[in-house]
Image (tube, rainbow, N blue to C red; front, side, top):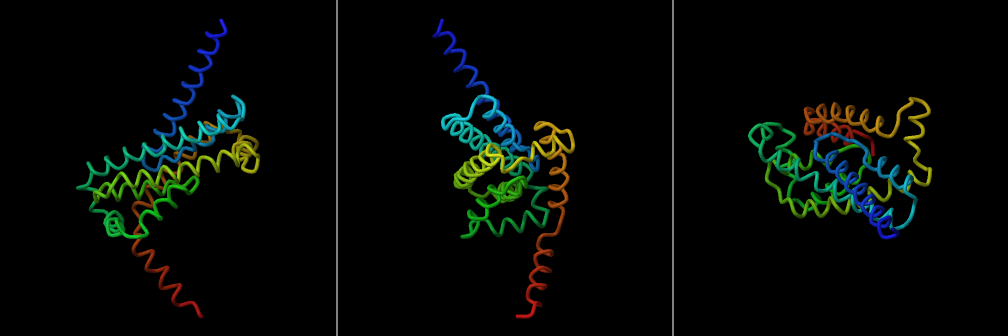
Length: 212
């Protein structure tokens, strides 16, 4: 009887971890989707009880799912290379791939909360056939840090986005993720269409004009 209960608990934990993995994978496999898998991960830990083991498992599973999701974006960009390479921003990213600061830039974009800027890097890398394996390694490290940091903040109460949005807007964690996803899809498309090189040039000229 006790063995059956233990088996049921193990199966329940594995199913929950798989669902977290699946959600983090899907939310990162769609460019600019931006759904916050760490909010759902925090809800899962809170529901099952906070412990070092559960925290570590959830952080690892969500980081792995988020990282592997980028493979879909990369190979989608490989398949759409003919049309993507016409975009000046994709060509600009191609000139950056392989340089000394590329992997550092990828780490920072993968680490940034909310904004899915690492999607742009994977689109540009796919269209320009950048090396995928080292990119995944860097991304996994960044996602480990990101998941651990955001979940800890949410659990500690320092980051209460879900509570604030529920109080003022009546949105649950899932509804907040859906709204954020829609907003960042629009933001992602607008950013993709923007002329990064021209904007960068204008900013550089403005900085140079500032008095010393």
